[in-house]
Image (cartoon, rainbow, N blue to C red):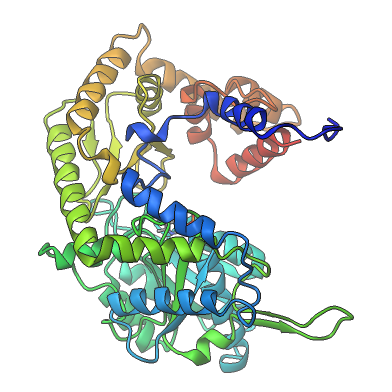
Length: 477
Ligand SMILES: *Cc1c(COP(=O)(O)O)cnc(C)c1O
C-alpha cells in the first residue's frame, strides 16, 4: 500500500477515519465492561481538552517544559498522599500499569544486585491471581517467577504459600489490591509482615484499586488497609487511566523512597548522541496523558470521585444481587469493589459471552486457572450506572438463549474431550489440528469466540501462549 501521492482534504480524511470505526464496539453506550473507564461526557471533554493542549509537548525535556515537570510532580503527590505515602514516598507517571510494574521490578532487581548479591538467580514470588504484567516484566528483565496459590473460596492470595515459596534467591513479593480477575483485595497486611520478616521488597499492585478503594473509604465504606499505611510496602502502582478516569496512557509508580527509585532510572551519556536521562521506560513522550490525569483529578476533585464511587458501588451491588437470583450463573468470591467474575456450573460460560456480545454487551472471558473456573470478568464503571436493569435483563435473555441450544454443555464437553485426546499423543500435526478445532482463521478477527475459548481453556497454559503468539503474528502485517 503506497502512501497517497497527494494529501487528502481534512473533511475527507476525517470521514474516512470515522468510517474505519464502523465495526468497533460503541463504548459510549455504557455496555463495555472491560478496558473502558468512562467518566461521562463532561469529564471526558475536559480531560481531552487538557490532553490535547499538551499533546505536542515532549516530557523527555523537563528543562524545556517545566509545566510538565510540575504537572507530573503534582499528580504523583496527590496520589501518594491519597495512598498514605509519607514525605519519603516518591514516584513518576508512566504509560500504564504494565510500565509501572516493569519499573518496580527493575528497581528491585537492580537494587538487589547491590544489596543481595547472594541472590544469584533472582526470583519474584507472586500469587496466581497477580496480573500477567509481572510475568511480562520478569520475561523482559530476565527474572524467574515463582507462582503461589490462592484460597479456593475467596480467590485471595494464600500468605502461607507465599512464605513457603521464599528461597535465598527471592528478591520480591507481589500482591494485588484488588486482583483484577476476581476483584478481591489480597491479605496485604499479612503478606507485608512476611516481606518484612524476610527483608524482601513488597510491591502492591493497586493499578485498578488505588483510587477507587481510597475513595470508597472516604465515602464511608469499609475497606481494609492496602497501601503505604502498612509498613513493609516498598512500591505501589496506580493506574490513572482506569478508575482515575483519565485518558490512556497514564499510570503512577510509587517507591517508598528515593533510594529504591534511583534503580528504576536510566542514564546514558556514552554515545555520539545527546545524553539520555529517563525516569521511565519511554524516552520521548507526549505531555498529553499527564495533563489529562491532572485535569481528571482537578475536575472531579475528591467530592466528584466520592460521588462516582458511591454510584458505581450501588450499581455493582445491584448487579451482584440480581445475579444471585439467577439459577445458572454466580459470582466468584466476595468482590471488594466494582469488579467481579461471573461463572456457571451448568452452561458453557463462553457461549454466554457470545450471546451477551451479540446483544451489545462486552464482558471479558477468563480461562480456568487452578481452582478458579472459567468465567467472565466485569468491571463496572461510571457509564454503566443507569444500565443495570438492562444488563440483568440481557443476562437473563442470554442465559435462556444458551440453554435453548440443541447441544448445550455437551458440545463444550465433547470439544474438551477432543482437545484432551489430541494432547495425549501430540505429534507434528497436533498444532494444526487444534487450530482447526478452535476455528481460528489466521489473519482474521473472529466474530464468535465461544469455540476458540472453549478449546483454549482445555489446553495447557504453555500451549495456549504459543497459539496466541502465532495468531497475533498472523494478525498484524
Ligand atoms: C490493568 C492492570 C494492570 C496492567 O495495566 P495496563 O495499564 O493495562 O498496562 C496491572 N495490574 C492490575 C491489577 C490491573 O488491573
